[in-house]
Amino acid sequence: MGHLFGTDGVRGRAGYDLTAGLAMDLAAAAASVLAGTGDFAAARDQHRRPVAVVGRDPRASGEFLEAAVVAGLAASGVDAVRLGVIPTPAVAYLTTALGADLGVMLSASHNPAPDNGIKFFARGGVKLPDAVEQDIEERLTHSGRLAAGGKARVPESGFGRVSDGPEHGERYLDHLLTTLPATAQGPLAGLKVVVDCAHGAASEYAPVLLSRAGADVITIGAEPDGLNINAGCGSTSLGTLSSAVIEYGADAGIAHDGDADRCLAVDAAGDVIDGDQILAVLALALKDTGRLAGDTVVATVMSNLGFRKAMNAAGISIVETPVGDRYLIAAMLDGKFILGGEQSGHIIMLDHATTGDGLLTAIQFLAEAVRQDKTVAELATVMTRYPQVLITIPGVDKSRVMASPALAATVAAAEAELGDKGRVLVRPSGTEPAVRVMVEAEDSDQADRLAGQLVATITNVG
Image (tube, rainbow, N blue to C red; front, side):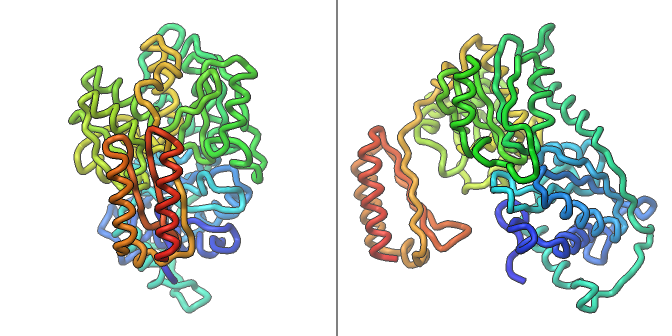
């Protein structure tokens, strides 16, 4: 079968890699492992059927995949509550709030419309560790499809029942609002904000949330038709938002991705404020109010050198992880830290959420501008963003390249030239036969030149 789970669930081209049959079987396997419906699962309360909440983003393929997932759950004896089109972090939150045994989200996040994916949350709204994903894959392999001779059965507690619960989205919005201080006009009063919903899951949620928090809201990218998700809009295409902020004379712009677990921003001049800058603002705010656990923030190896310098200057320690929010969360739970994030806009605030939440990030960031009586551009000056060059070299032998003495010598020479005024990172891709190069320097020409030297060495070796 190969390895199904990637860095964030099971993802692929809908109808090709990700079929209705696979979605149904995967849901049944997940029910067995996570909800105790099969012989692979731990004992559970036999006097009630387990419950799953199921959400999706507005991709056209999400409709048939939702039906398949719900069928797999119900056939396994799990009651399924369809939440409809809703952000991924809302599914995580509602898994906990509704006491569900598991949550399922159908989304390919920032990927284009032809793709889709299935993400699972365990009890408590947490993403699955590798070992549990492996258990689900083994269960899928063990059980097989009915057409391939799998054994049909009726669950002991009866088939699961299916219900619709779109009203639970209100509970999620209420929860987000409680994370802000209550004020007469609203914690975001006085701010004019453009929000780009990427024609995705945030479309019915982000504008409502910002408005209820007191902001004057202009909405773009909120007309999903199933095919336009992330198309020229959202956090992967910030030019549209920048133009709109300038056109409307707004104080700030907020951009989400297709499933709304990311947040990036732009200031009144249309300049981008990335995840590192947002994370720096939130870290300093939490430290200033004595709420930053361990005076520590968790970030990935890709975090900008300017972020690292700003945190060091503020007396905040950084725990570094590989790229991917699952690694951030694991390190945060291990060290009992409450704040982590990455440049792409995945920000995790464990005081309020179990996963990255773009809507939560947006209101917390904007609320800091109000609290400090600063523009978002002024907020972002807490760190200087160093020029960063990122290059992917495809089609190389990762093992040979990473073990190459020639590459080690080139890296050492670049590091010696940069000293403490830059950074070099060379790493193998986790998803393809490629090596990724990152160079940061105070001067962009120097970063380009050193990156070019590294690419030439890797190409010669690989």
